[in-house]
Structure formats: structure tokens, C-alpha cells
Image (cartoon, rainbow, N blue to C red; front, side):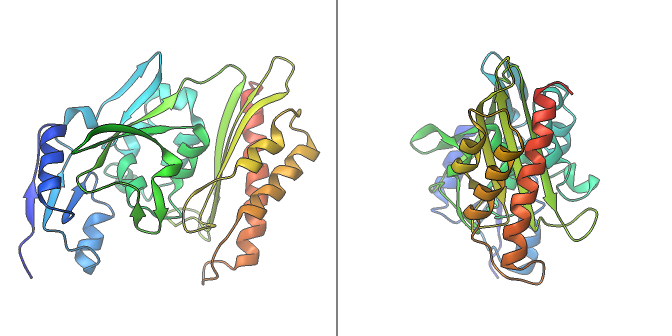
Length: 289
């Protein structure tokens, strides 16, 4: 086995240069909670590991008029304990608190959870529902990508050679809005989602829904933005009929697999149930209750 090189760049351009020089043989180390396991199992055999935690920009969490910008290497704990994230995006925080154990959350990063490209990643569906975008740096400069456009298939992303995620932007929270994330797992904690559902919605002064997003995980080869689910709520008072339509749209969007953790039929049905429950929680938060 050839030796794996290790690099710890201090800037984004330096990290891009190192990754690009590896010609596709580099792997980014943010938290390492997935990568180190993959190395031990022989799933990944990179030429060089590029540790980005030493880049200050990638660890920062900043609040501005544009929203909340979160560095891609910020840990689950740092994100989940940040007062502004907690106040404005509780659904994202709920998802972050479900990633592994307390010890894992002290290392696992938001960028790593996305770029590991697991169909069952909790934080990814919550970010999609929130309408989050991410900045990608690479040899051709920086570009902004919607989170739902990053994962293409299990273990595969839309990032090119030498590219990595620099930060995420959670948009400004609108008045009378709320979000929520729920998942089903066989155990009470420290498990992978069998199904996960995230909902974010906005109400007008009269309580009618003006915008909504539904995202699902663990029910398809990639996390899903279910446009029909959000559309089922828009223009309604988010009553029982609207929630039933949301649930139906969630189930219809599913393309899951059969495995020992859940059948296709089970996952399809539970996706609708969780979508309805998550929407009800988001509605309560939007109403201030």
C-alpha cells in the first residue's frame, strides 16, 4: 500500500491548488467521521488528504443581512449550539443534533455530511427544506450551488476535480415562518435514518401558506426536494386536507430500496406520515406556538 500524503493548507486557494494537483486523487478532511472509517475499511484510498479545518473561513459562523453563513468545516455542535441558528432555523438544528453521538457531533462537519453523499444524511434534507445554498471553490474560482443539486447518487456529488465546499448560506428567516425535521430509526438514537422528512413554510398575516418546501432523505438514491409537496400547502391554511395532499406527494416521490432496515412499502408510507408531522410542527412554529 502506498503512503497517503497529508496536507493542511491555511487558505482556500492553497487547498484548491493541492486538490487540483492530485488530479482527482485527493480527499478533503473536514471532520473525518466518515473518511477515517472509509480509509480503515479500504473504501477510500486517496493519494493525498487535504485537511481544511485550519482555514479560518471554513470554521466561521457569521450573521448578516443576507442570512447566516456557516463555514463548511464548522462542526455539528458549533452549528447546533449557535444562538442565531437555533432561533431562526430549529429544523436544521434538530437534524444536526441527530448526527451520531455527542462525540461525533464535536467533529462531524456540515460540509462533510453533505459531501459524503449519503441518501440518508439528516442535515442535508433539513438544509434543502431551508432553501440553503453553498459556495463551492475550485480551479475556476467560486460558484454558488443549491444544496439539493450537490448529491447525485450514493457517494457521488456534482463537485469537479479540485472543488470543495467553502460555506453554506441559510437565508433570512421571514416573519410567520417555521421549519422542522423528523426521522424514523429502529433505535432511539445513534442510528441512520430509515426515512427523514424536513419542511419549511411561510404564512401570511391571515395564516395562509405563501411558500413551502419539503425534502426527504433515505427514500431515494439522493436526498429529494419534493416540489409537489410544497405546492400542496401553498395557498391553503395548512388544514387537514392540505396536509393529506402533502403526505400523498411525499409518498409518491419515494423510490426507496428493500433492505433489512425497512421495506419499500414501509418507507413509502412512513415518508408521508413524517412529512405531515414535520409540517404540523413547522406550522406551530410559524404561528409562534
